[in-house]
Length: 471
Image (cartoon, rainbow, N blue to C red; front, side, top):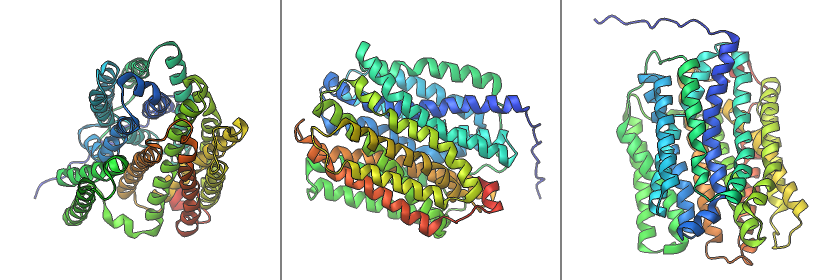
């Protein structure tokens, strides 16, 4: 019989140091969010600079989100085993190096490869940083406040990204969209070395390489068919092969995961309607958000002839709504449960999508801003209840996996949203783009309606003590 070793319990840092750790970790979240929104507003300029069409631009965005989605859970497992600060810093270095590759890319293919490498680095930042925050703040009430701040940072990055990107494109060129990551990465590396303590999980899970491979292949093939479908034909032999490949990868993933003692993804969680509803809600919210961002960028710059800076400023109502409502939603979840904020999220997103279903080249700017604000408010209300619903009532050993799966669902929704939006407007000229994008806005409204169903089916009306502690 082997003796079990008990890891020493580290001393709880002072309040000032705990919130400093939160600030450093939020900087990484800011980086991950910024890199999505800042690139979106620069897509037309990238297309002109590298002579690439809408389909290629979709891959430039989705290479990042697909790799990020596929590696989130494994990166969390690596951090638990080898040290969270160590993996966090490795992610920063890799993200910074990939940003330099993107900035120097001579072709679209190199830029797509650089974006995929950025996704690898980003997968080591977001979930690992959140684990560091949770480990640093043992008090449930303080931890809930920290998660509210954490959620609002994504809204802030959404606000800063398009405006910053527009300004950089006005004075420099699209390569500056990636150069800007360098000082942020350097700052995060220095601050993490000084302030972030090292931590590991007591019983770290083994890596599930077969599950990881099948998950990545399934995601890439499924979203790849969505991107390439308008070009190759939905019933062409390559498309049919893609459908078959995605189905085989999905079936193989389920089979492998159901037989492993320590699977990459705990499929038993999906037997809980509350958890399944949260995952569906996470996908729906990020489909809506990313369709909005891409359709907005293409419409304002191609159809309306706006500059990148003007198009970036137009997204401010969306970002302000998300930033303001995220912490408000977190407090509401703690007091009244997840159902009300989810219903509010569904209502606002539905209303925002419906405002745009009759979009024309001459739609009122005021209506555009109102629609963006409504979608932003809905997005802000959605994140906290989805996270709380996913992990509420689970023991700590399973709550971490549930959170990682929900994060993966968010990135999958982002990739699908980009693919669907790009597929709708592929081949549409500046005058026809508004009409071609109308089904996309109907889909955005449909995502809001889906949140109503998630709220009614899976979210408890009031928070219970267990879910409050889990959040």
